[in-house]
Amino acid sequence: MTVDSLPGAAPGAPERPGPVLDIVVPVLDEETDLEPSVRRLHAHLVERFPYPFRITVADNASTDATPLIAARLAAELPHVAVLRLEEKGRGRALRAAWSASDAEVLAYCDVDLSTDLAALLPLVAPLVSGHSDLAIGTRLGRGSRVVRGAKRELISRTYNLLLRGALAARFSDAQCGFKAIRADVARRLLPLVRDTGWFFDTELLVVAERGGLRIHEVPVDWVDDPDSRVDVVATAVADLKGIARLARTLVRGDLPLQELRGQIGRGALARPDAEVAGVPRGLPGQLLRFAAVGVLSTLAYLVLYVLLRAGLGAFAANLVALVATAVANTAANRRLTFGVRGRDRAATHQFQGLVVVALGLALTSGALALLGAWLPAASRGVELLVLVAANALATVLRFVALRSWIFRGRRPTTSHQETSA
Image (cartoon, rainbow, N blue to C red):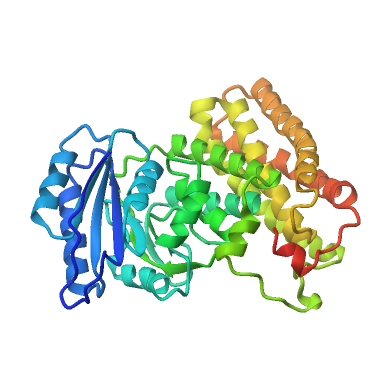
């Protein structure tokens, strides 16, 4: 790995030992987009950003002209640096660039600059002031304006739904390529993040949130890049594996979250017992919450099934999609429907939930087998309708099992338990 940095200050800014902001642009074979994007970003920072800055082009294993273009830009433009890695992985590039930086605030943006740069100062300002620890651009929040296809919109919302269910994440958009973090916080968090690919920033956000750190969200204007070369299926599978790994890590208590919370986290605010959890105690309220979680889980299941169907086949895609959404469903119902918070018996509840899933798997797999025997030439639409019907029956049985077996007699926990969730 090599680093070539040319730190400098924006006109009129006070002298500092290093830049306030180091914004990383991770690239892999981006010879077409790199130069216009870096020039546009540089012009924006010079004209509108009030703090000293650096742009770091993090090239991880490009084989085209990207390294040559990056080196030329660094030689020509002040405050532009180049970092070269010999291995691929967006997370690996960000970890290396952020670890080597002397800036107070570390950020990154995608090379296609899909996010309007007007959101950059609102992203960074709460970190410079110390109000927040991390900041993310969100395409799913109130005030965001997004232009993209229905497929990518559905995938994004499904992914964030899975994060809320499986990992109890409260931030709205994990995948927007527009994030920032205070350098002192990054030094504590980066050693705890294992992923080196696309799941890197999701894992970073989950660990930060569990550690009691404040995440600031900025609604952004975002226009989809139609030439994006992201392999959606491969990325989805990798993200599902990352969610499962991180969930196991949290259940086992392998992360030093209490230590992190004690060092740099923010404690939970006390609230009256009457407001704890906000979960309806009666059967009607539980049914409403369960139905809402079930609808979202079914949508997530169908999206995953469609994405995985071509590569894995009907039965394997059904298994993977069912298990992934079942984990998220159990976690969401545990917290929202039945008001159980904290890590106590979380692993047991997930195991019991997977036992119930076996029934759902038998129903959906049996439905697919019967459909194949009766209508071998059935269309994909008919296949999905059969799966929806089978899942509806499985959902009824699932609610009965959750209420009468898994969470029988459970009451909402106190606020002090919630802080360790």
